[in-house]
Amino acid sequence: MNNMIDPENKGVDGVTCTTDEDLAIKVRTLTKKYGKDVFALNGLNFSVQKGEIYGFLGPNGAGKSTAVKVMTTLSCPSQGEVQLYNVDAIHYPEEARKLFGYVAQQSAVDGESTGRENLMLQGRLYGLRGSILSERVVQLLERFDLMDAADRLSKTYSGGMQRKLDLAMGLIHHPKILFLDEPTTGLDPEARASLWDTIHHLSKEDGLTVLLTTHYLEEADQLCDRLAIIDKGKVIVQGTPEALKGEMHGDVVHIETMEAISEFQAKDMLQGISDLHEIIVDGLSVYVRTHQGAEQLPALMSILKAENIKVRAATISRPSLDDVYLRYTGHVFTETEEREVSR
Ligand SMILES: Nc1ncnc2c1ncn2[C@@H]1O[C@H](COP(=O)(O)OP(=O)(O)OP(=O)(O)O)[C@@H](O)[C@H]1O
Ligand SMILES: [Mg+2]
Image 1: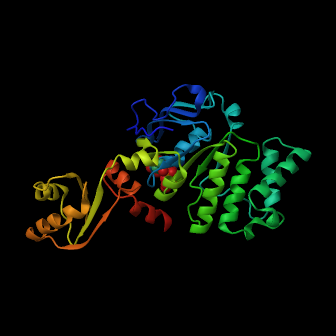
Image 2: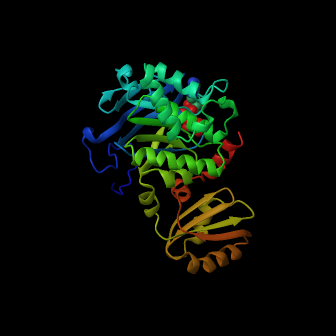
Image 3: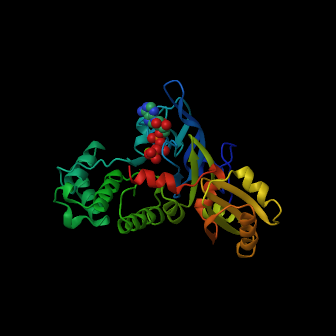
């Protein structure tokens, strides 16, 4: 795995190899237009290596689910290419469908059936029958710790158990790729951590390629080998979480002001201070990137005081994916996430 960061849509993938043989997913100039002027996807380019966990991180409406629906042949693109293990998924959807499992943003579990029945039905839909199917169901129930609850109606399962059943259903036909659309949204932290563990094992022990979408920066950071920040139907930047964070040297000083100031005003005020690499203003927050946050903070505060700008709080931290997101989109991610969770 290399550490390359790729400001996408320039034809580079940010992967160590470029032969199609090593790729599980290859997407080129994917566009999806709804009606006259909604470009849900607007020239999406990226590739995923075999066995990788690749994350799509983006706010509401970024195009994550649309991209997954097109890749899983549920929706036709307006333009572009999707190759799954060298199968052209747009022109040969039947063949492509054998290669992947798909766990949708909304659970596909039937609450009025037991866990075992849900799995049996899913298996039959993929043409599995007899002992091959029943043995596969037992294998998955054991694998996902659902054996004790196998014959209970799945509406009695916890959120985490239902999501695990969703995952097991997506794997019934031994796919090579698993698409997960927001696998952990709405789960409590413990269930989320347990699901991360499961997804990690599926990739690292079973060699499954995983493409997941997420609203959680922490999830992308902990789980993904590489990730793409998506906004307005395009990849804004992609790379390993380490590379994306590593690109941001030094400290981030976050100053919360009592009244909003413009970015122009902030840059104008602070231009005299040396070693400030970046100044971004988002609402009442001023973010300043510098090599030595602790050393620069007194100078920053005294300039703000001299300019009569009241400060509510100031913090210094190492760059996180939040800061990477802010840098490439110009706004913080957490507000979007909070809106989504409370939706
Ligand atoms: N069937 C549809 N008809 C019209 N517009 C649509 C349709 N599906 C999605 N869109 C629009 O396409 C854009 C991308 O939507 P999409 O569901 O892919 O976003 P998302 O990144 O998955 O968002 P979320 O994080 O909320 O799930 C949005 O502007 C959405 O309103
Ligand atoms: Mg979505």
